[in-house]
Amino acid sequence: MAPVFGRRLRRGTVTAAVAAAAVAALAASQAPGAAIPRDERAAGASDTPPPGSATGDSPYFTDLPPLQSPVPPTGAPPNGGDKDAEAGLPATVLDAYKKAESALTADRPGCNLPWQLLAAIGKVESGQAGGGRVDANGTTLKPILGPVLNGDGFAKITDTDKGAYDGDRTHDRAVGPMQFIPSTWATWGQDGNSDGKKDPNNIYDAALAAGRYLCANDRDLSVEADLHQAILSYNRSTEYLNTVLSWLEYYRKGTHEVPDGRGVLPDDRSDTRYPSVGATPPPPPVQPKAPSYTPPPKPRPDDGKPGGDGGGKPKPPGDGGGHEKPDPPASVEVDVLANAGTGDLVAKTGDAFAERVAVRAESDKGDAVPKAKVKFTVVGDTDTRFDGGARSAVVTTDSSGKATAPVLEAGEKAGKFTVRATVVNSRATGVDFDAEVAERRADALARTSDKALVGAPGKEFADQVEVKATDHGKVAAGVAVTATMIKSATDATANDKGPCFKDADGKPVRTLKGLKTGPNGVLKLPKMYADDAPGTYLLRIVTPGGGTLTVELKVTAPEPDATPSPTASSGASPSASPSA
Image (cartoon, rainbow, N blue to C red; front, side, top):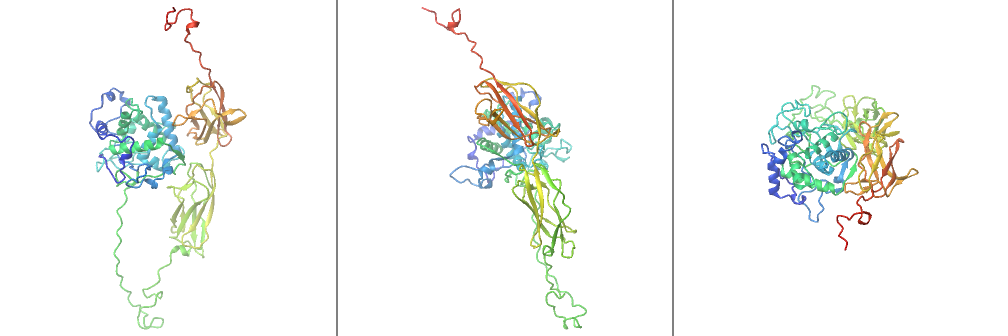
């Protein structure tokens, strides 16, 4: 679709200000029916994207990162320029991006895919899966669907999947957090979380698929031309390219992890008819009805008789003469708010609560009160929220006086909290419900391989540490893991020498937090690197619940220089000068 330049256009801030002519040439190379460049034709058919783009050029979010500039930009950045909020990436989404980068580093080392590029595209395509609205396995809580690609303002793509992914048997729609159209997913879909399925609505699957798609045709994404071409293959729009590049630069400067469901939601799209990915177009505004005239009631038969007013005159308010006082709001009639069968409120971190809070509004006579407004509020130090990310919700009681709160979704913080139900505009006593988020636990950790872990000085270890967590013999999925290069078996503090992990900037890191086991309880740690100090070192891996594993790492001594010196050789060195 043609680029749309909206009110938030601040393209002067994009990295290196992409030259218009170069961008136009790249965009043209991706146009439908355009000849595939010679280097792309040479690539294997299974590694060549189909004509078109990954997303079918669907709409995308055009929000830009906060600017750090003394000159105010035109158009306010999201969240008023809250850099800390924008830099936060939902934990599971961030994990998926990093795992995709790790997989591609092993499989396609020449591609040089940075996870920050996946984050930039994920931001633009779906706002990081709607702020991280995913379950413990990485699957979106609700399908994320782009608009119907029926040619009305978008590309026209007739159905290719019989509605299997997008639920539409007439036309295709972009699907999932990385917004693949079904035909592209059929070719590039991946199983990134090893659950045996390729699901475009799963962030692990979608992130790995996006990475492979971007790396196609032997692209080296450290080369600017290849990077631009890869982004344009995702959506053929100059503005799209610029927007992704701006987020790529922003994420490279630093990010941090936030709980799932707590990411910042973008609000500005290239097509304003669809305010968010997966949203239904809003209904037209309801026009207020013109006030109507209601004739006064006819005189009652008893007017002028005993009990009437004696003259058929309008009766005072409340006497049945057509001027009755309006009924008071139902909420003020509520005298009692009672538990309507709510059971135990317990869930593990990252899960939805199976039980929903329900109350019944009653009058002082014990009768049900319908149409009362009940407010449910999450109270306490917790990141648990109702479906949609809100801390409170107002629900109207039904004909039986019952109100049921939205689904509660546990965050990443374990502990106890309260759900409070109160009646709006009423003095009726509220009801408190105790709730608890239990930390996922594992009481045992084991390596999935017994292969010795050996590294040469200054080199990366050939093998990565992979562990499986169990709790009472059962697979422990979604368990938090901390890995530390410790000083000794009796000193668990982080070592200041020896093997290390590395951060995005290549700096040594000897403690990793925020790791989680996958659906099968397995976690593969990032690559490890040896420094120049040979010896035997220890890596300790721990989980809540008592799971502990200590792994031995060996750094070999430097190999002796095999080049003979002139004095050690019986003959003259080829580079030695003849003696006088």
